[in-house]
Image (tube, rainbow over all chains, first blue to last red; front, top):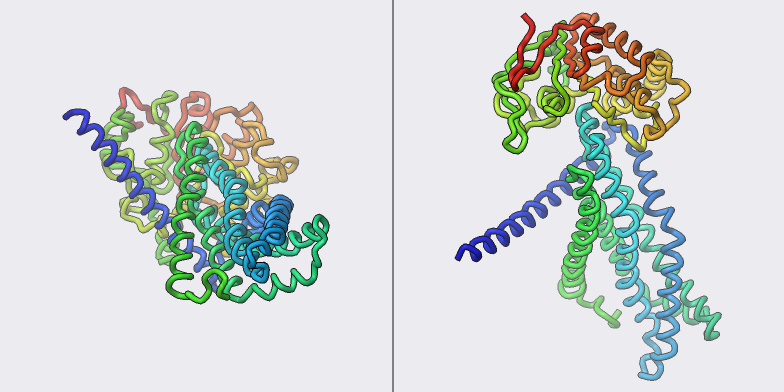
Length: 278
Length: 232
């Protein structure tokens, strides 16, 4: 009986912590969005280092990741194109090549791979950096000067991360399609321009909006979750733990949100955009 | 609201029966004192007994960890709306024990940070003020270095400059003499004395160093058995 009570108590504590974390992450997100709206106000005079910090974040998250994402996009695109060109005609669906590329590379692989790379590269480093700032009392020092950490640290990161994610997602899609076809031309000697035309014809404005929305959501998730876990650090020993937590929680949230977005987009709002119909 | 804050010159610190504790470990009991404009106080407290925690409580940075009432500007610090509390802190200088310089800003940007965030001055004017401070503290040769490249003394001097650049009404000093060499010690003592001689400023210093206590010659309070004995 005693053991049952202990197990129940532990389970309850875990659920309560989960609940508190979710509420705190939502509150941090809303505070960040509110402070961002404050910066957009033309009469706003404070926080003069906002642009500098945003550009620093874009540099760290976007510009420095260009080579890595470019190479991976090339490999993904090349593999998909070669496999599709070799195998699709065997099943009599060769004419759907462009649409397969659109659905598979632009809508699915692109956002997921970009999210995972940025999360692993920038999200974790952000959590560790903020964690060390907390341990060194730099965050307390900001508060003592009357500088809100959410406005000074989280919000520029949030804006920079969202901008970087949008650019990286489009970059991934372009490199994966164009580069993938170029790789395929070099290896299996396909007519590059004909296949490129097929791929470009298949892509619609709906896909552009879809990339915009999914990359904005990805950027928000990475920045907010990483900052939340980074700012919750109290001791040096916690830093490594929160880095793992931020990675896992960001991934889990993204998975849930991706399912919701796909359900909303393809089942309710835009049923015509499903699979190979458009 | 902003005008109200600027017009309110009755800045003061008031502690009323403050008992602070961390994880059921009581650090101090029933501490009560009031500091009005022009008051200076040194609190002598041994190492590892909660100086920094007490300082965070007095300065209103920590709202948990204690029972009792801490008042700033005549009002309970817990009753302030966050935005107002942040604006009031602009006029508080705080020197941390470990200096706590922002690690991705160089020395110049660290000193300019509170001005860049709060003041309505132009960037050129802020740069001039910061340059004057850098010259006064003789740290021109390190102004473009990052905090991790500085020695403990240099970091402490930069922390002092950052605290005083806003011309604060209240200055909180948490162990200001820790890690200072002789020259820096003299410089810091001079700066503290100059600041405390200004009219209508409050200086609260917590230290374990008797040399520092004797050098600044402020009224002297001491914690004995978790109780504060104030100067008569």
